[in-house]
Picture 1 (cartoon, one colour):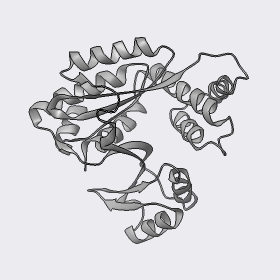
Picture 2 (cartoon, rainbow, N blue to C red; picture 1 turned 90 degrees about the vertical axis):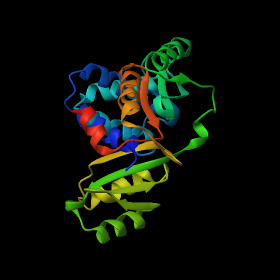
Picture 3 (cartoon, helix red, strand yellow; picture 1 turned 90 degrees about the horizontal axis):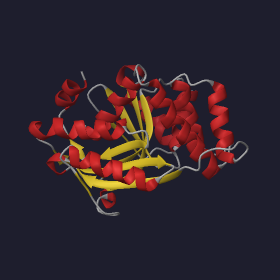
Length: 249
Protein backbone atom coordinates (compact mmCIF):
# COMPACT_ATOMS: atom_id res chain seq x y z
CA UNK A 1 0.00 0.00 0.00
CA UNK A 2 1.19 3.52 -0.72
CA UNK A 3 2.46 5.39 2.31
CA UNK A 4 0.15 8.37 1.89
CA UNK A 5 -2.95 6.28 2.57
CA UNK A 6 -1.38 4.22 5.35
CA UNK A 7 -0.24 7.36 7.17
CA UNK A 8 -3.68 8.97 6.77
CA UNK A 9 -5.25 5.90 8.35
CA UNK A 10 -2.83 5.87 11.29
CA UNK A 11 -3.29 9.58 11.92
CA UNK A 12 -7.07 9.09 11.81
CA UNK A 13 -6.88 6.42 14.51
CA UNK A 14 -4.42 8.38 16.67
CA UNK A 15 -6.61 11.48 16.53
CA UNK A 16 -9.31 9.71 18.54
CA UNK A 17 -6.97 9.65 21.53
CA UNK A 18 -4.92 12.74 20.76
CA UNK A 19 -4.18 14.98 23.72
CA UNK A 20 -4.48 18.01 21.45
CA UNK A 21 -8.24 17.72 21.27
CA UNK A 22 -8.63 21.50 21.09
CA UNK A 23 -6.54 21.67 17.92
CA UNK A 24 -8.59 18.88 16.34
CA UNK A 25 -11.80 20.76 17.16
CA UNK A 26 -10.36 23.95 15.66
CA UNK A 27 -9.63 22.23 12.35
CA UNK A 28 -13.04 20.53 12.28
CA UNK A 29 -14.89 23.77 13.05
CA UNK A 30 -13.07 25.52 10.22
CA UNK A 31 -13.96 22.73 7.81
CA UNK A 32 -17.63 22.76 8.86
CA UNK A 33 -17.76 26.55 8.56
CA UNK A 34 -16.27 26.75 5.09
CA UNK A 35 -18.25 23.73 3.86
CA UNK A 36 -21.48 25.42 4.99
CA UNK A 37 -20.45 28.69 3.41
CA UNK A 38 -19.68 27.11 0.04
CA UNK A 39 -22.48 24.55 -0.16
CA UNK A 40 -25.20 25.61 2.28
CA UNK A 41 -26.12 24.49 5.78
CA UNK A 42 -28.13 21.34 4.95
CA UNK A 43 -25.86 18.27 5.19
CA UNK A 44 -28.32 16.23 3.12
CA UNK A 45 -27.71 18.59 0.20
CA UNK A 46 -24.05 19.30 0.97
CA UNK A 47 -21.86 16.14 0.93
CA UNK A 48 -18.78 18.01 2.10
CA UNK A 49 -20.63 19.37 5.13
CA UNK A 50 -22.09 15.95 5.89
CA UNK A 51 -18.62 14.39 5.94
CA UNK A 52 -17.27 17.19 8.13
CA UNK A 53 -20.12 16.71 10.62
CA UNK A 54 -19.50 12.95 10.70
CA UNK A 55 -15.82 13.55 11.49
CA UNK A 56 -16.79 16.00 14.24
CA UNK A 57 -19.14 13.46 15.79
CA UNK A 58 -16.38 10.82 15.68
CA UNK A 59 -14.33 13.17 17.85
CA UNK A 60 -17.28 13.68 20.21
CA UNK A 61 -17.62 17.36 19.36
CA UNK A 62 -20.66 18.84 21.18
CA UNK A 63 -23.72 19.32 18.99
CA UNK A 64 -23.83 23.00 19.93
CA UNK A 65 -20.33 23.56 18.53
CA UNK A 66 -21.32 21.92 15.25
CA UNK A 67 -24.49 23.99 14.92
CA UNK A 68 -22.64 27.26 15.65
CA UNK A 69 -20.00 26.45 13.04
CA UNK A 70 -22.71 25.80 10.44
CA UNK A 71 -24.48 29.07 11.27
CA UNK A 72 -21.21 31.00 11.02
CA UNK A 73 -20.70 29.48 7.61
CA UNK A 74 -24.18 30.36 6.36
CA UNK A 75 -23.97 33.86 7.84
CA UNK A 76 -26.63 33.38 10.53
CA UNK A 77 -23.94 34.10 13.13
CA UNK A 78 -20.99 36.45 12.82
CA UNK A 79 -17.72 34.64 12.30
CA UNK A 80 -14.22 34.71 10.84
CA UNK A 81 -13.95 34.91 7.05
CA UNK A 82 -11.97 31.76 6.25
CA UNK A 83 -10.53 31.02 2.83
CA UNK A 84 -9.06 27.84 1.35
CA UNK A 85 -5.46 27.84 0.13
CA UNK A 86 -3.41 24.94 -1.21
CA UNK A 87 0.39 24.88 -1.09
CA UNK A 88 2.63 22.59 -3.12
CA UNK A 89 6.18 21.44 -2.54
CA UNK A 90 8.67 18.62 -2.20
CA UNK A 91 9.90 16.77 0.86
CA UNK A 92 12.95 14.59 1.59
CA UNK A 93 13.43 11.83 -0.97
CA UNK A 94 11.70 13.85 -3.67
CA UNK A 95 8.17 13.25 -2.37
CA UNK A 96 5.57 15.62 -3.81
CA UNK A 97 3.30 17.15 -1.16
CA UNK A 98 -0.04 18.98 -1.42
CA UNK A 99 -1.00 20.94 1.69
CA UNK A 100 -4.65 21.98 2.06
CA UNK A 101 -5.30 24.86 4.45
CA UNK A 102 -8.22 26.90 5.73
CA UNK A 103 -7.06 30.27 6.98
CA UNK A 104 -8.10 33.84 7.78
CA UNK A 105 -4.74 35.18 6.60
CA UNK A 106 -3.19 33.55 3.53
CA UNK A 107 0.05 35.55 3.73
CA UNK A 108 0.68 34.47 7.32
CA UNK A 109 -0.09 30.85 6.50
CA UNK A 110 2.16 30.92 3.41
CA UNK A 111 5.07 32.14 5.54
CA UNK A 112 4.50 29.44 8.15
CA UNK A 113 4.22 26.66 5.56
CA UNK A 114 7.39 27.86 3.79
CA UNK A 115 9.26 27.88 7.12
CA UNK A 116 8.14 24.32 7.95
CA UNK A 117 9.21 22.99 4.55
CA UNK A 118 12.61 24.65 4.90
CA UNK A 119 13.15 23.52 8.51
CA UNK A 120 12.49 19.85 7.74
CA UNK A 121 14.45 19.46 4.53
CA UNK A 122 11.75 20.26 2.00
CA UNK A 123 11.08 23.07 -0.44
CA UNK A 124 7.89 24.97 -1.18
CA UNK A 125 7.05 25.09 -4.87
CA UNK A 126 4.98 27.34 -7.09
CA UNK A 127 1.25 26.76 -7.74
CA UNK A 128 0.79 23.85 -10.13
CA UNK A 129 4.25 22.41 -9.53
CA UNK A 130 2.99 19.13 -8.08
CA UNK A 131 -0.83 19.24 -8.27
CA UNK A 132 -0.79 17.56 -11.68
CA UNK A 133 0.55 14.41 -10.02
CA UNK A 134 -2.67 13.89 -8.02
CA UNK A 135 -6.37 13.24 -8.56
CA UNK A 136 -9.14 13.60 -6.00
CA UNK A 137 -10.79 10.34 -4.96
CA UNK A 138 -12.95 8.96 -2.17
CA UNK A 139 -11.19 6.25 -0.14
CA UNK A 140 -13.09 3.78 2.07
CA UNK A 141 -11.42 0.97 3.97
CA UNK A 142 -13.16 -2.10 5.42
CA UNK A 143 -11.57 -4.87 7.52
CA UNK A 144 -11.37 -8.16 5.63
CA UNK A 145 -12.94 -10.07 8.51
CA UNK A 146 -16.06 -7.86 8.44
CA UNK A 147 -17.51 -9.08 5.12
CA UNK A 148 -16.67 -11.34 2.19
CA UNK A 149 -14.90 -9.81 -0.79
CA UNK A 150 -17.72 -10.74 -3.18
CA UNK A 151 -20.44 -9.23 -0.98
CA UNK A 152 -18.47 -6.03 -0.42
CA UNK A 153 -17.66 -5.71 -4.12
CA UNK A 154 -21.33 -6.10 -5.04
CA UNK A 155 -22.46 -3.41 -2.58
CA UNK A 156 -19.69 -1.01 -3.55
CA UNK A 157 -20.05 -1.32 -7.32
CA UNK A 158 -23.85 -1.17 -7.17
CA UNK A 159 -23.55 2.10 -5.25
CA UNK A 160 -21.18 3.61 -7.80
CA UNK A 161 -17.64 2.72 -6.65
CA UNK A 162 -14.90 2.86 -9.28
CA UNK A 163 -12.63 0.14 -7.96
CA UNK A 164 -11.83 -2.11 -5.00
CA UNK A 165 -8.56 -3.76 -4.05
CA UNK A 166 -7.39 -5.98 -1.24
CA UNK A 167 -4.58 -4.95 1.10
CA UNK A 168 -3.02 -7.04 3.89
CA UNK A 169 -5.94 -6.94 6.32
CA UNK A 170 -8.55 -4.75 4.68
CA UNK A 171 -10.25 -3.86 1.41
CA UNK A 172 -9.88 -0.40 -0.07
CA UNK A 173 -12.75 1.02 -2.12
CA UNK A 174 -12.09 3.92 -4.51
CA UNK A 175 -14.84 6.31 -5.60
CA UNK A 176 -15.21 9.64 -7.34
CA UNK A 177 -15.67 12.56 -4.91
CA UNK A 178 -19.26 12.87 -6.16
CA UNK A 179 -20.13 9.24 -5.37
CA UNK A 180 -18.19 8.99 -2.09
CA UNK A 181 -21.11 9.71 0.26
CA UNK A 182 -23.45 7.48 -1.75
CA UNK A 183 -21.08 4.50 -1.54
CA UNK A 184 -20.32 5.14 2.14
CA UNK A 185 -24.05 5.35 2.91
CA UNK A 186 -24.73 2.10 1.03
CA UNK A 187 -22.17 0.32 3.20
CA UNK A 188 -23.62 1.81 6.37
CA UNK A 189 -27.14 0.75 5.37
CA UNK A 190 -25.84 -2.83 5.06
CA UNK A 191 -24.20 -2.48 8.51
CA UNK A 192 -20.71 -2.86 7.07
CA UNK A 193 -18.25 -1.42 9.62
CA UNK A 194 -15.99 1.19 8.03
CA UNK A 195 -12.39 1.41 9.21
CA UNK A 196 -11.50 4.65 7.43
CA UNK A 197 -13.27 6.97 5.00
CA UNK A 198 -12.21 10.29 3.52
CA UNK A 199 -11.73 12.22 0.32
CA UNK A 200 -8.03 12.35 -0.51
CA UNK A 201 -5.75 13.52 -3.28
CA UNK A 202 -4.45 10.23 -4.63
CA UNK A 203 -1.09 10.23 -6.47
CA UNK A 204 -1.06 8.93 -10.04
CA UNK A 205 2.38 7.45 -9.36
CA UNK A 206 4.37 6.99 -6.18
CA UNK A 207 8.00 7.58 -5.23
CA UNK A 208 9.79 4.98 -3.11
CA UNK A 209 11.37 6.66 -0.09
CA UNK A 210 14.49 5.23 1.56
CA UNK A 211 14.50 4.49 5.27
CA UNK A 212 16.98 7.34 5.72
CA UNK A 213 14.60 9.88 4.15
CA UNK A 214 11.38 8.33 5.48
CA UNK A 215 11.72 9.61 9.04
CA UNK A 216 12.66 13.08 7.81
CA UNK A 217 9.63 13.11 5.51
CA UNK A 218 7.24 11.93 8.21
CA UNK A 219 8.60 14.60 10.59
CA UNK A 220 7.90 17.22 7.92
CA UNK A 221 4.35 15.94 7.45
CA UNK A 222 3.80 15.88 11.22
CA UNK A 223 5.03 19.47 11.52
CA UNK A 224 2.69 20.58 8.74
CA UNK A 225 -0.27 18.84 10.34
CA UNK A 226 0.54 20.47 13.68
CA UNK A 227 -0.17 23.86 12.10
CA UNK A 228 -3.67 25.06 13.01
CA UNK A 229 -4.38 26.21 9.45
CA UNK A 230 -3.50 22.89 7.80
CA UNK A 231 -6.44 20.57 7.14
CA UNK A 232 -4.79 17.78 5.12
CA UNK A 233 -1.40 16.85 3.73
CA UNK A 234 -1.32 14.59 0.66
CA UNK A 235 1.79 12.97 -0.76
CA UNK A 236 3.00 10.58 -3.45
CA UNK A 237 5.45 8.82 -1.15
CA UNK A 238 5.70 5.04 -0.87
CA UNK A 239 7.12 4.00 2.49
CA UNK A 240 7.11 0.38 3.74
CA UNK A 241 4.39 -0.23 6.34
CA UNK A 242 6.89 -1.36 8.97
CA UNK A 243 8.74 1.96 8.79
CA UNK A 244 5.52 3.96 9.09
CA UNK A 245 4.31 1.86 12.02
CA UNK A 246 7.70 2.13 13.73
CA UNK A 247 7.63 5.91 13.41
CA UNK A 248 4.01 6.11 14.60
CA UNK A 249 4.64 4.02 17.72
